[in-house]
Image 1 (cartoon, rainbow, N blue to C red):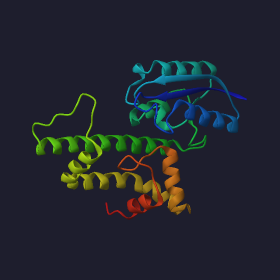
Image 2 (cartoon, rainbow, N blue to C red):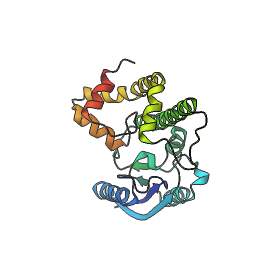
Image 3 (cartoon, helix red, strand yellow):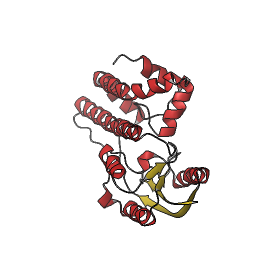
Length: 227
């Protein structure tokens, strides 16, 4: 059995979200470790934003140090548990400590890891841009409106604001489609069904442009969208 360190991470906003909880992550990594012949020597847990750098992630630094000392890899459930920033993931790949992502397997091509990281980062940036556009549209419609200290637009208000900025929304959707379409076409060329592509995207932790889950119908829309 090969030794390995397990790293689990949630942000405070994600702790109750399905599929991102600590228990779900640990179960996925343990199943992966058993299948690949790894002996887990430590399970380290951190509550921190995926946007934070390594200096603000003491538990991850500890995990990397332990792994380097044991000459062992770090195991995570999903790539975004390490980070949602391409530069961060690239830096880890360039270090002397290997890491494996349970839902990608041990044989994933390094270039594909960069692609997955880039798609995840772009998707997060687009969500932020859409939120800013919605808030700007709301303020333009009602200059006296101010959000609460921890509130965002309600569902119906957000829909109303986004409809006012539909042009920028279409542009953002086109940009997102151009990012994920090559990956989907690669899966399609290998013989994977539309439903299979949707399942694969969900397993990778890549959300749709609206932040939701993939289905065959949403895959069709992306593949058929004119960039």
